[in-house]
Length: 405
Image (tube, rainbow, N blue to C red; front, side, top):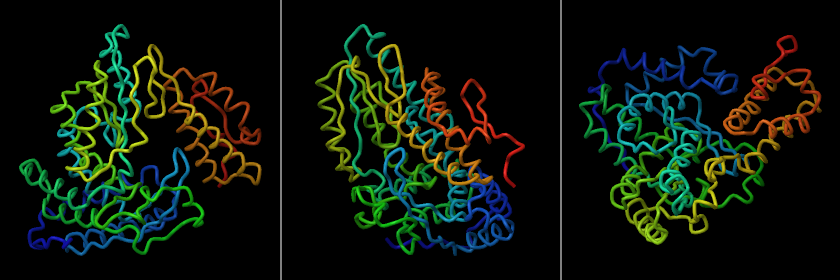
């Protein structure tokens, strides 16, 4: 696609743009401290931000190479980590346009929205099941669907046009330089992350990863990199019309979506079967996406449903086995480190980040015995020289006197 040529003379409020870039920088470095990429930027961050600012206001912004690697938890997927300067731009874009798009999303779109994450989604689906079944006294059915290779299947031209048309239609609410932001969005959306990327890891790491989940095998002008803040936001924008189609056209009152994992709840099983074909056709004709044929779940509510790392059943919610397995694997990874050498300051902080993220998930459910058994029986005794547990086995804390310098 030919990039739009914008009028450079239209750039307004340059001082505010610079201030907003600094704000985006502070947002981008949260939870990214001590990464090599971030530290190189921070050594002289004012100089780097001003350089980025000059590129942006002169319409000469060029994205840098990404780092590509494969992760295995919670599921195997390909990640493209953008250069830190580009992550600053992602936050810059997000901070401007999210207030425009957020009111357009349905309430039960749970991804990349403040206060509406996985735990909110789990509680809402549990509430929907109770409401539809009249507190488990009447029949209702749960339909869970998934899109095949969602991020890899996103059509960039369709996405960009959706974003552009929405922002133009809401331009009276855009308290920023709209042509400039559209320029940055266009550069970000149509950037080919595979071009000149740095591949981290072995070629064998990609074994077992379906081609439908890799940017290296996407169709022309398709695919967004998993790992970027803008990809998360644009993923919501792309499926927003589907959400409204399900709610308004299919008349599904009890509906929720997290990225491409969505659930419909209804008292009529046959009607849900009919919805499958309607949704399949809508995805194919309107969004050029494919409903995953092997990930269609339709059951009576009494059977329960796995959703967002939890199993929702009548009168109880408990953690899914995969989440427990991932926690065990994370513990084993930390054990390998501490058995090999004295963990560095960075490794100690990485331990806290990994372990506390799982404890943060688990403590939302009745998992005290699981947490106690998992940690006390599996965590290497060497780690207790560096950490202790607090908050009723809800959080690891470093012992200050042993933190490595």
